[in-house]
Image (cartoon, rainbow, N blue to C red):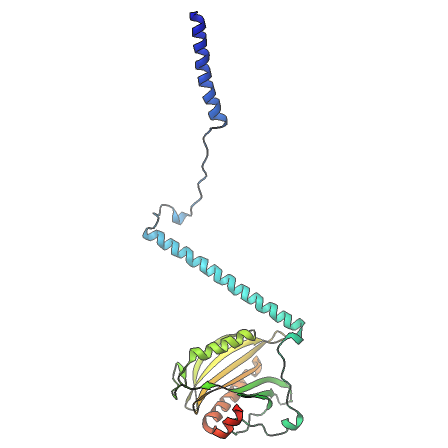
Length: 268
């Protein structure tokens, strides 16, 4: 009897020892917790401490910089795709204004001031507030275009470092930027210039022609008799200096010779 009891106790003790060990080995073994690798610069930094905030802001700046580079790259890709589409389908591009008939080209080309237009400037088209010219070289081939327009009324007669006729240069620059976005171009620079004793605001931009060449775009703004006039030119880079000189002559002519009757004919 005692032997049976002792044998039963030994079996129970043996089973009680073997089963937990087997279970721990197979199912309930120690789990290895993989800790996320932490950057060296973040190690040992207490969360929300001064150093932690410094590292966090630096990390956010890097993220914003990467996002800005991605946006700039995407914008460049869109512009290149649009330029390639224009080259493949030229009829989808902006309509080219036809030159005036020979009978009109033979007439003396005049500016709104009544002065003669620069050599090579031939009237192309007129709208209620804009005169357009085609610009030819000495061989009679068109190398660019120019337009004289009334932007709007002046707020005052003052033109200083940051305004033209009381209108902020930021507003005028924004108008050029919006136009360049529509015409697949971009603004390069802007500055104030003194032409014959008058303050003139100049915006320098560029755009891409159908053949892929970069076009020089110049925009001059000046106040004349309570109105803000704009002289805009479009030409290849090798003709930009010539058109810049001629544009300054046109600005000087507008400032010194504009008459109410001629201005009215321009705005008709």
